Length: 413
Image (cartoon, rainbow, N blue to C red; front, side):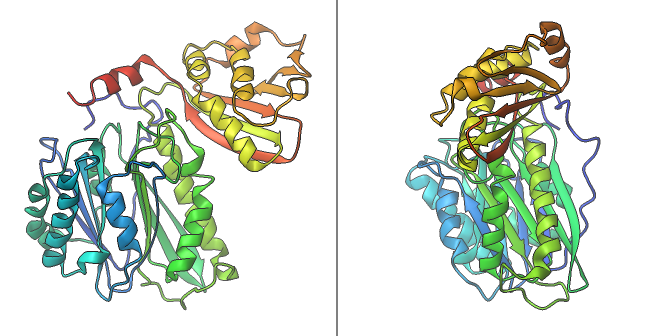
């Protein structure tokens, strides 16, 4: 149970994520930081499980990120292990942090019968506090006994920090007539302006797909899901998104990303990634409003994204929305400061169904009463047409409230 008020956008319940052939898992209370709750998760994929991953582009990454980047490239004939702890990010702890990942991997390899070099690690929590690996490794023997094909909700709860609810998603598809299931969990609430994914997300499937194909799919689909969200413009040192495929489904291996048999699977994977990303942004710290910023008419898609992020990250835009003030002048400001091509007299700006401004000035038909009424909605949509090209992108964000300040001022207490 989170100590923070539950997000007004929280789902009524955690979705039913079915067991996946080729995977088993367990959680435990390691006492890394929290008391009376789980904070450790182990996922074991059968021999032959393929793994794709993307990681933070923050130049001060945590020791688990450094380790997992290398582990991703290491093939193994044995099982694949993913080990995740909450409570400390194990970042900026010097040699102590590096020793902790080594000790964790060694302990896991010995207990679960995996190749040490191929084990993937992820940590989330306070930066600057090295992980006490002995707390983690001490749990492995009983976790091995508890391994089970079910347990996705327990896993989602174990990796939470300031999250107000566990996050999960599932979808099904067919490849060559075989039913394929995709399950995913994520955690994230603050320090969210991903330059790859969110803080932590793990997606698994029973599909039989070669690693290079998985990697290509993940890189592509991350761009319009996790890489399209922002809570506070801050890119975590720990961002990790992993996609694992056990290969247990009854279809021939897919070795080509252009294989048409992938079409339905790709759509289902996009559905899961987008669902998880939206759950993360709708659990933004202190959130009261969910914001969609749709930018069209930019000189390129990347330019549209940069403009959208400038708007969604602006403290002035975010606080205006929190205060239900239709201060659209702040949107103009955010467009102009984005560092992207924009011409004042070609801009068109709308909020929801209300056209506010075009050709460098406010429309005479727009009234503050219309704007004020629209701003009372819990979901706010900002539409901007730059008027210079065909570039489009949609960014998803949230407002900035005193709740965000309270959570982050108290985070280490």
